[in-house]
Length: 96
Image (cartoon, rainbow, N blue to C red):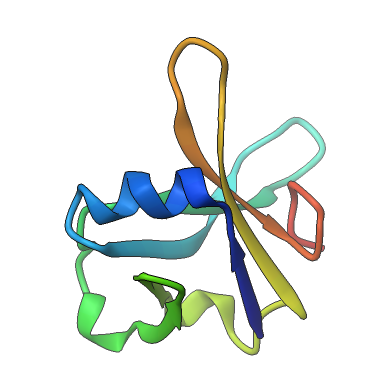
C-alpha cells in the first residue's frame, strides 16, 4: 500500500502529535451500509493492532479492518471553512 499525503495534511498531523489513525467505518443507508475511510488524530481503542507507515515527516497508523488495503491511500485536508482530514481508497470516497 502506498500512502500519499499533501503538505497541508502533513502540517495538520505534525502539530497534533505526528500520527494519523486511519480505519474503515460503516455508515448505514437505505440501500445498505457504505464503508468509508475515517481519519483521526486521537488514538482509538486497540491502536496497538494498527500497522504503522512513515509518510514524509508523519506516521500513518492503519487499522486492522483495512486488511491488505488499497494500492494507494491518499490523505488530504478538505472543507472551505472548517478544514478536516479525509482519506480516499484508490481515489474513491467509498470503499468497494
